[in-house]
Length: 155
Image (cartoon, rainbow, N blue to C red; front, top):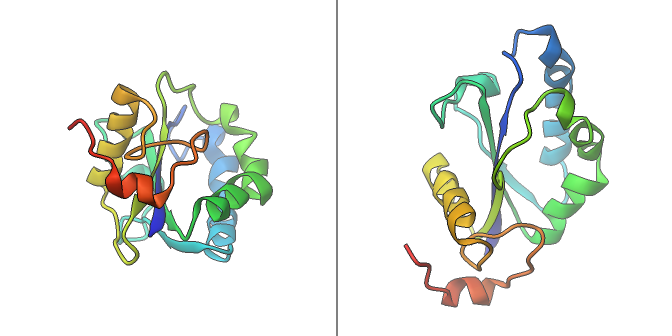
């Protein structure tokens, strides 16, 4: 199995604004780092190469989404917290509002499966409503693939 991750962020302004310029300037570099990271499998884009603001997964053009697939938890963790990604991540308050609820979710998927935005949204909603479980979790939990396969979510 592989590990999928979905996260959202609420931008403080439009992509064209001077406020977002440094975030936008770093995006390609951060994505390129992910693409070459050990354990990276796939990253969502809108199939047209548009900017993140063109993906309206929610009812706001300010809610940005990110979704990717990794071979395992450790590969994703290393990318998020031990690569150039962390430099940009530490500056998130410059560009994004504080989210009132959990804004990132992890879950196991079958190898070869490509998750949809709807799947990501559903897993995040489940985590927000039910808390950590083998169905939807964060880095705080270390559920196994076996626990995820055996778990029956309260849908």
